[in-house]
Amino acid sequence: MTDPLVPPEETPPAEGSIAEAHEERADGGPWEHPGIWVWLIVAGAVVIALFFIFRLISL
Image 1 (cartoon, rainbow, N blue to C red):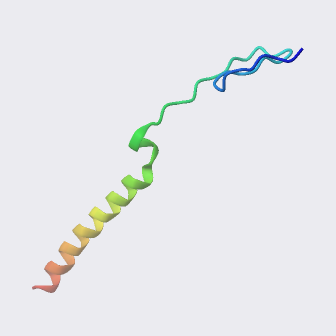
Image 2 (image 1 turned 90 degrees about the horizontal axis):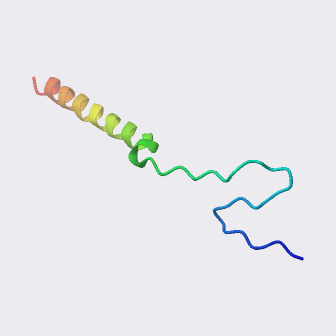
């Protein structure tokens, strides 16, 4: 006799296994993508630096 089909989100039964299927963690949104924040900070620092550079040039 064949084993019954198991839905994808469940762990198939295994002999001697006591572990249960763990749920996948939800997406953390922008906090899981720190590269975006780093580029925003770098871009802001460049804008501020350019402001002071242009101010020095115009003196």
